[in-house]
Amino acid sequence: MVTSTVLSSPSQTISLEDWMENPPIGTEWVDGELIEKNGITLKHSRIQSKLSSYWRSYKDSSGQGGEVYTQVPCRTNKQGRSPDIAYLTPELVAQYGDAKVLPQSFPLSAEIVSPTDLAEDVIAKAQEYLQSGGAEVWLVFPESHLIIIATQNQRLVFTSGEVVSTQIILPGFSIAVDELLA
Image 1: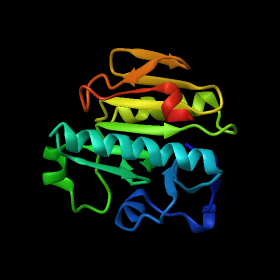
Image 2 (image 1 turned 90 degrees about the horizontal axis):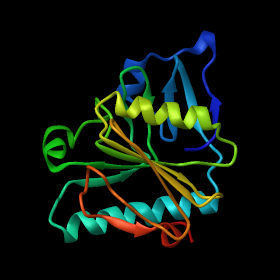
Image 3 (image 1 turned 90 degrees about the vertical axis):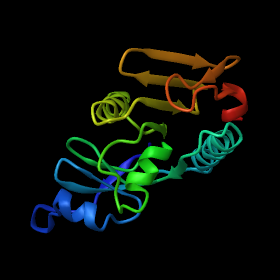
Image 4 (image 1 turned 60 degrees about the vertical axis):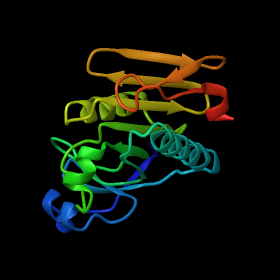
């Protein structure tokens, strides 16, 4: 997750339906406003690339299939979002693989938290994903070497020196926190 800048003004509003029809790259639709995701650092981008690569390699080698995406649009129950990394199951790829915007949250998503993000906003976004069809959300805090995994039933915290693993989606995937955040 990165800090954001409002792109639309009250005189230049865009509807959620308009956003879903043609979502500008690097934006989200939040509370009726078009928001540009910004604040991406080299560290943020490196971790995003590593985690997406690890998930992609694991889904291929384990035979689970599906697709891994970065900065891809989805619709939650109330917003238009673009998680930093997302995994779509083979069943949902077959159903929605050619859609412009996934009409629900991804089953597995991750947000890389920037130093300027507010904790309440990040946690609220994870809850939003879970309430909109998501099963598992990773919140990655690079500066504090911390990863929080949220599911409908639990919240788990992994820190430096520990191994983080998926809980529901992509079963069997694990990686050392220090390896991911190095």
